[in-house]
Amino acid sequence: MPNAMIHGRPYGTGKRKNAIARVFLSPGEGKVTINDRAFDDYFPRETLRMVVEQPFDVLEANGKFDVWATVCGGGIASQAEAIRHGISRALLTVDSEHRASLKKAGFLTRDARKKERKKPGQPGARKKFQYSKR
Image (cartoon, rainbow, N blue to C red; front, side, top):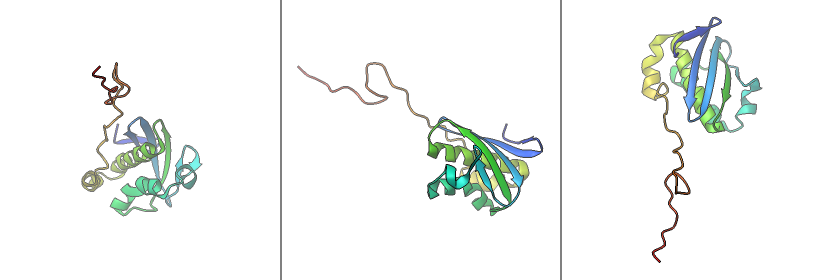
């Protein structure tokens, strides 16, 4: 459901690995709240905060929207990318003209790479036990 309005607010679902983010936008001054925590508190690393804000940088819309997101699953980096995906989808609800620039930046494509499953008779997905000739 990429283009949705829930309770009158643009909504987008973002996914990356096992992380799932529900993102709501509202007009505001750029405040970001994730799981009822402050942005700087939830993402202490500057690079992760930069990843979340990338869609606004592409559209030159910094400080125009408040972001309220809930995210679960995955690690902290995949959660940041899931939120970026959700923000990008929610921005399409605001104005569908943004689609070309967001698509070119690669923010609308769901990164489908996941951890490969462990195979039976092996210690991991690709690793093999040491071969013994005798």
